[in-house]
Length: 617
Image 1 (tube, rainbow, N blue to C red):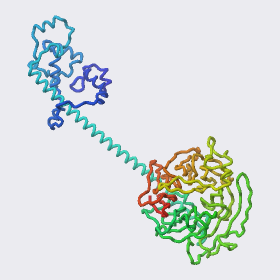
Image 2 (image 1 turned 90 degrees about the vertical axis):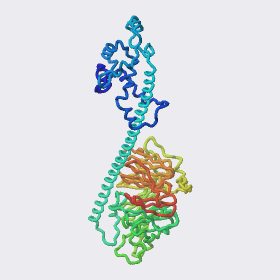
Image 3 (image 1 turned 30 degrees about the vertical axis):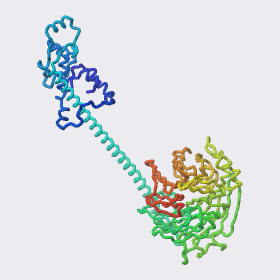
Image 4 (image 1 turned 90 degrees about the horizontal axis):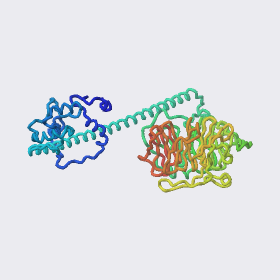
């Protein structure tokens, strides 16, 4: 029965043997105020009480002395019986009887006033009601001393009860904290199960892709068919995972890492450094250097590895196609190479900023094809007039971006450049941008950039150093006919590769876009403006923004994590499920990380300390 019901019920209702009085209801109504009040400890109250004393303070008989004093002070002895019955009927004396139904007060406890005083009080009428202690009752010394002792004991009882209640509150608080910790752990376990389920789905998909590839392959031994290559950028993850953290021999590179990529766990890694025109090929199973890719005239800026095929782009404006099986192999290699055209034909026609060309140069001075003794380079693609800063290939199609502010689409089967997409033209036609946005003019002026070289200083890294950023096209990726690019004007553009026209521009970055990746739902881009932005492809709006202390130079993501290089010695990891940030630091780099490649739970990172490290997340 709740107290709202008790307030409407007759006052003779009781819980057990004790009647509910109006005083009880007043206390219930003021419960919140009473609990919030600070109750000082009275002087003389015992701070430490025995177990027996604590028991005696909490049993029902501890209230007997208080009830006795109340009856002694308020009961008019000559009318005790009738008055008690009358007041009991009105619910005002419930609590004056003990558990046996007898009055606690006895005749010896009360000192009565004289009969003359009683008669005098009678003659004054019946309106006076109950008399208080100061209204005429007289107590003896023994009674007053007894009441003093009882009051002190009752105060000690209150102290004991308050201490017990406070102890229970502390205990309940501890239990709540323990339950909260258990709840948090269970929620974490639930998130982990979600991640494990996603991982199993991805692993199953990777195994199915490998199975399909094995069943459908029709390779002739020793021939490279680029049209059968399944890009690991689209592949969710490997079928098996490493379990160790390792790094390549320190004698590998001597300058900051500029590009890297690997085929799969325990597969082949290719890495390039700043002042070395020869990318190095590593066997991840043994951690040893296999050989070098010789052919570029300058720093290699971008690398992509798929199975045994590797593509590199560099400061010399060329793209090299490599067969990694022939790295530093002096033995005769069986099988024929792909035929290359010995005539460079160029047929240019400009239509809305799109230039279609056909051009190819063989990998050697021989006019017809690359012979068996020409090393691992099987093609050199020429067309860009400045540094090739980014590339992406899948199946037989390749897209490259360069500092000449263009992107080129290549057919790897024929070695021909089939389309050139001009970013300057896209910038000069802002109607392709999302309405309500404007290009960040302070970063890039089309007319000025057309006449000069694009170069902006990077924000200082965590170690205080900085560099000049000159890669106008920071990143490209395509899927089917959909191409996404990030450029020095801070824009993320979506292109139709059938027409070469940009059809949407995502604006929000205030610095050059250095890296990006996209899937069915989102484009995720990193920038020198110290942020990663997650774009919703359905609306074109920003789904989420991750901010860092330094510029973002590389990123990759899957369904669970975003892994990024953000100008610090550690690799940043953002858990997309729990929205938590973490950093890979243990046995990590000594200088800021600038390049990384992430495949499911396997990561390779390259930094300004000239080292390449392998991580198992």
